[in-house]
Image (cartoon, rainbow, N blue to C red; front, side, top):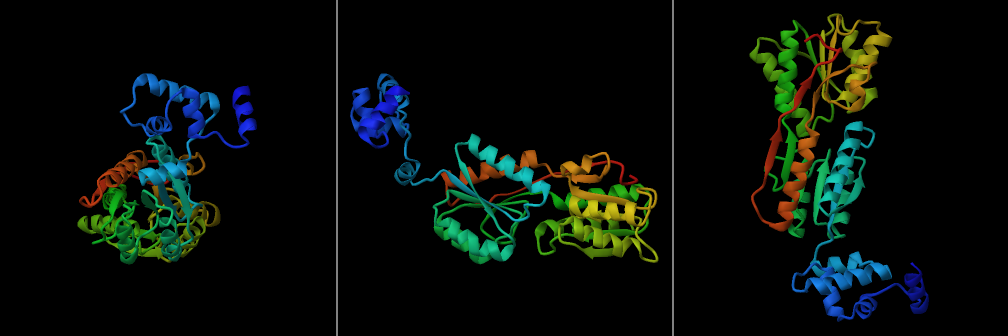
Length: 342
């Protein structure tokens, strides 16, 4: 530490590769090859260079190295609903998975789809190695722009038909069908679905799986309310549904946050017994769903499989651009708790 401080004091600047070369007794070119992991340098010289770098406190300039390698080792992660606990976990898992692979994350928090269209082109100026869009869709125009820039894109839990972008999704159609089958087996008669963001593939597929399974068993979707993936919109949908003359006895919500809103309205505003009077099911399996006061039956997204799959697809696309588009669907799990008769 004293040596490092003394050297910086003497030089009046940060330690450079020349300083490391002088300390190690090698050329600056040798230091450069060692620091860029070239295998043409002997082990003995590599050891001398790294020892000198440690002793002098040398830190390679990441920006300069990225220019040489034409890689920033940076991946953009675009997320919209920061308020949803599901995406808090997704962010944590992605940043950890990428970091373990030697990549850093540029987190882009956007308000809506219009913000994605404005923000992503600006982010591409930072020469990102790739982009992962979680809970955001991609227009064909923006997909083309990413392709022209040579930046691979992976949609997480979304897909866009006929777009030249990779995608990793929960099998939402199967998840919706699982819920319908379990509720039918539980003896329910009147079914309702509460949508989240309707224009997304996620919401469409969950509703489709639910409605098609009902129809295949001789039932129909009696009611359809539209929310916005928030607790408040779920509560409002619950008021509309559960105060009807013939209210549903089974409500399936596109997300857990909305299901918790319906659940609280049923229990605390309308004094209904859950699940005797009405069964309520969500989707995602956020931490609160398992809390004792909620005990929400839900569909668990396989995030622990989806995140590594998305990162693997991204890194393969970075290494070998121009390959075939990969679309991966991973099966979810129905988690049975106290909010539904199944």
